[in-house]
Length: 67
Image (tube, rainbow, N blue to C red; front, top):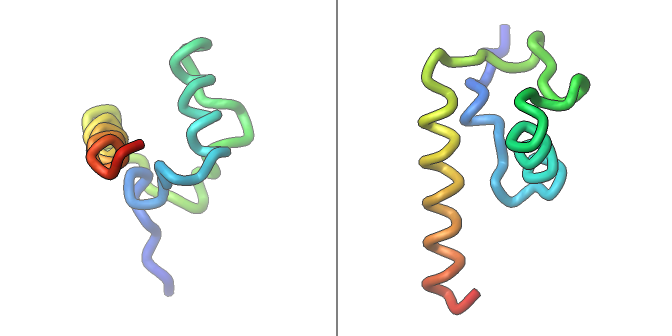
């Protein structure tokens, strides 16, 4: 049996569709209805903090590379 990834392991800050879904969450207060498939990932109870951490780390890396 394959172990499910956690939501924050699965979320890819380089995937434009994931970024669009995150923007939808910011604007609408909920993920797009087809974005998260519960059968595919485990949703941690602290996903908001972990996802913000993951996104901000990638932003810092991008800016330090001259982006």
